[in-house]
Image (cartoon, rainbow, N blue to C red; front, top):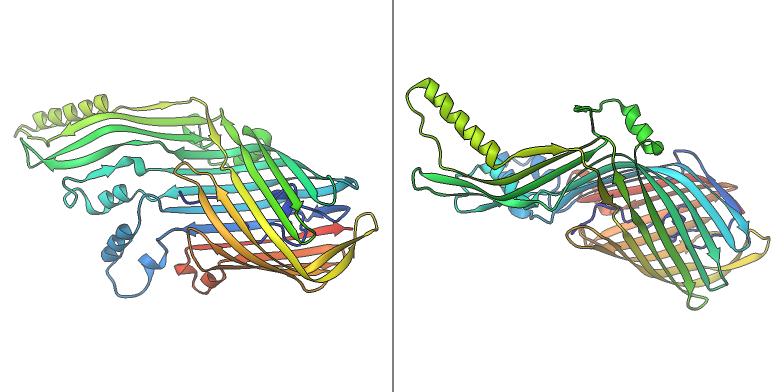
Length: 443
């Protein structure tokens, strides 16, 4: 499987930013307290499409659009997908409880969607069944999930000693809406018929489509304020946990790791689920000359279809698991040794340079998705820090990213972009992402 979820490899363990605590609650901090500028402390966007890009269809190259569609359908398979993820921090703040303990909390809104390309279904819709005789159209390829939710979180980071720091974060999810379909079965096939040229079969069809927060009283919700209210503990709720650790193997060699979004959302409100289940065989219709008899024949076919492949709706609650993410990293620090003032007015030594490797994984229904990142960090001054990454993932073997963090008094500004080489032609980009924010950090 390939991911929905944003891999923020540039931000991970970078420059002691407060936002790194959301990627690893066991990350080390070196300040008394922080306050994120509301709605501006953490803004991120991530878009990705495996195999297919916009220019494949819309490039001005004098190629017929039908040939382009056919080429795209030939290139994709059922494991290719389209994803989008955005996050906006509404609140983010933290303070040091004592020399060993740092508390952080906040609230952010997240929109996350992923849809796999159902190659067989798309091929059937664009080409019809005439070119697909004797081929099974696999309906199990229909898989998607989209949700908008608000996340309230409270985290604690504990420094055990100079080597070990660990942390955890408790989350309350408040979902505005959810749409998902998975674990579908069934095929549609066309073969040569006995009583007609062709016979069409629907075999072992079992399709399910779940929605929450979209339909109320059999009407689609159109008031945006309802969705906003549902993200503020007014909708379907769930719980989650994050765990993280940082361990200094030597003064210069560091290991860190985290597990994020180990949780679920229980959907009980504004539910509408649709299920399609059954088998059906169709050899065509032999309409009599009498118009009334023709209508009766068509109605008989419709009634038989509805009986053998019924479409049923229900309002049963369901649980949707969050996509759990894992991070592991090794970092080796070197270069000039510098000191900076700590939260307790002592001095902390750090090295100006570091190199390392990070492994990221997110769990999805088909299989885990992995990304491997190599990185180089450089502190230009005590207040200006940079990071360059090279990532191998589902989208590219040439994914270059860069980040910059600058401290101007108490004001911290940071920004990161990923897939730098793709920004020169966004229509041909398989993936683009960025993060940016403004914090007030007090040492």
